[in-house]
Amino acid sequence: MKVSAVIPTRGDVDLVPIIKHLNTYPEIQDISTVESDSVFGRFLGVAQKAKHDVIYTQDDDVITDLRPILDAYEPGIIVNAMSPEHQQHYLGTQTLIGFGAIFDKKLIDVLLGWECDPLFLRTCDRVFTALNKHKVVYPKITHMPYATADNRMYRQPQHFGDRVAITQRIFEKTGIRDAN
Image 1 (cartoon, rainbow, N blue to C red):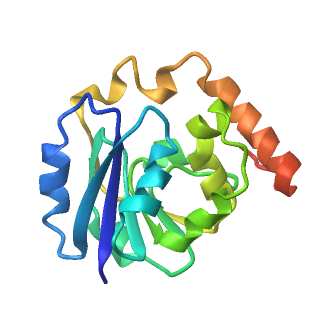
Image 2 (image 1 turned 30 degrees about the horizontal axis):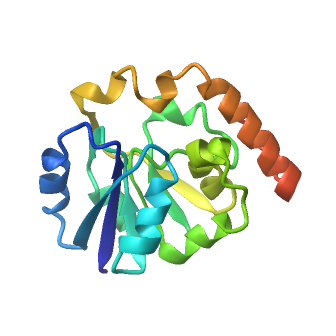
Image 3 (image 1 turned 90 degrees about the horizontal axis):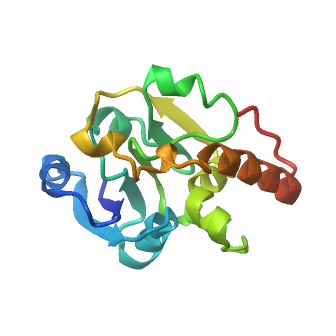
């Protein structure tokens, strides 16, 4: 299996440890970093930079054991890494992909036609996962020291409100009701 890795970042952290880790997996054929202030940069990177049809992505603040993720790959399904502690907060159709996820490049097509306003640009991971099938694996995840920095998305005052708003938008546009 040939996999393209896409790592979104604001550009304010050292990606060398992550890139070195990714290079230890022979399936990872190319690694692209995407500097962006929005989560949507992840998907732009997939569309514009990824050379292969299978994508691995993660955020810039973790090092994740990819073997369980790669081994669980299934065409047409997002396989995402999560800790059991985080899983309890994602019991519906939405899930996290920032700890690591593998999926077919074509799955990002579900994002076409969505209003690209600031809410969507910040929360499009939720749209992506709500509109695709997914399964969770629980590999070893190591958080980088800056994972709890004040500029991390989950630490922003509007984060909970954004979750509620995008969940409502997903329901209004698709009829998918989420338990999150």
